[in-house]
Length: 458
Image (tube, rainbow, N blue to C red; front, side, top):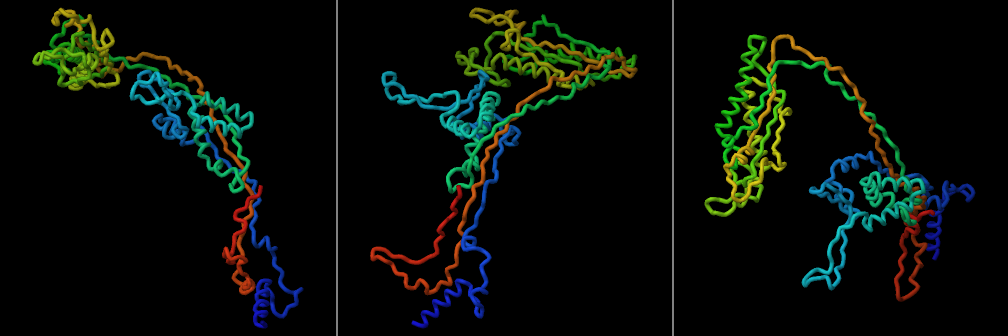
């Protein structure tokens, strides 16, 4: 009994930090209260925020790449961006299912049909409502203007709000933040582009020659049938009517300061086909279906070049040959000065009348439509001082460009909290030795308990 009382007395001395040889009034007093030892208090009330802006690097990347719009913005809002290449129009909306009335369904048909609806999905509308409820009147007006002026950024801000860390951690007593709010503002940025630079004040004038091939000439044998392969007749025609004229001018100027070198000032090549149906090609893409009859099978070819494809291929073949010959004869060529026209008079790669049953394919009206015409302007460089033509410089100020930059701020306040720091029960020893479970239907064992885990202050 005496031993037990001594043990309990020693335990109590341990708890109150009793020092032997000192009276009670001289014992050390704890610098902190029990609550200060057991709890840590954070006052809170600090501002936290996330800023979403049209100047964000992430948004600028998305803005410049429409292929990212769905994966980075719209899909999270259960929406979709669609672009029609044929009509060159875009629309944003969402897919929904519409029930087909029983009387309108055929046997085996699904009860529902998918339908694309333009506008914001129900999910996006819910996010809009949640954002709007956290704005004041001024922010709400700017937010509504944004939906019209910059719909992509509007959807981007919905997406960012929906995934906001601040928003996710604001609300109940166990969340880090309180008093969620959304502020939206805008600023017009005016950018003044630099003045347009004037052209050079002078132009160098050299002697030259303009060559235009005869547009009334029938050209039945310049290309292989259905092909873009140049025939010897076409090459001879170009050498005789274009290259020879250039070399003749170089000889004339040789005694007057000519250098024998030249420069291409312009080159235009016009190509077209007749309305005769094409056959299968070996050198041109067979991308058409309206084909002539295969003499071997007496059936139409499965595929053949369209007239536009054939005319384009012939124009490019003519350009490549002419450019090669010009360079071989000392003429500098800047290919940006070359223009190819292969639409023909009819706009589909053809010229001349339509071919009807009974027409003769060798009729001149069809042969004249199968052609390549060339117009070239060549300057010959001279050694004498170049003649110049004064061109007064003109400086024009481009129109200023303005854009509206938007900014969305998701803000909140940090919440104060009380956190239980724990208590060392190791020295209690036999103080609780007499503790017993009070009932037979349960067991009760003493243990350390974190009694106020992360309790939040309102």
